[in-house]
Image (cartoon, rainbow, N blue to C red; front, side, top):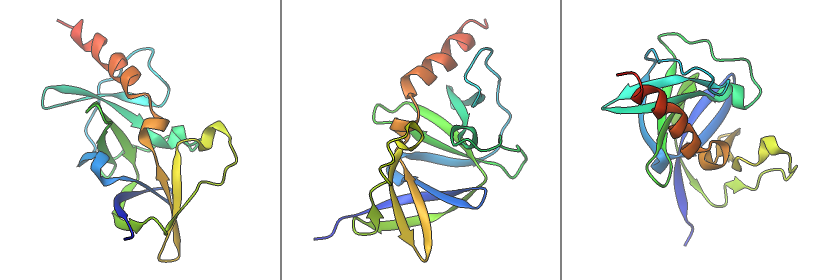
Length: 156
């Protein structure tokens, strides 16, 4: 029996990327974030969401693209790792949900460069290619949570 998984796809420039749907906590419009001094260059700040401070990352910068232009049309995808730690990624737009069979997903190119180790695979969907991302390989969720929390706790 062929196994399939669902992926939420999103756009960065004209390229389509996908994350496993079970990693997605919610999709929301852009909200102002609080900057964190001395944080990573691609960390835009933290967003307070239901009592939790969530690091917001500019995924475009992680991929060597120009920084995101933040507007009211910008989208934040809140994702979580296996331990339930959340972070947000800013994307240009959410595309769609793809139900992908294991046959549709091909192994990453195997170039073994650091920039490509986050790739779970590439899927061919309707004559387009969707790069599937393993977020836990791309981001250190624990480190980001530690970066986001101490500054906020010391504000009182």
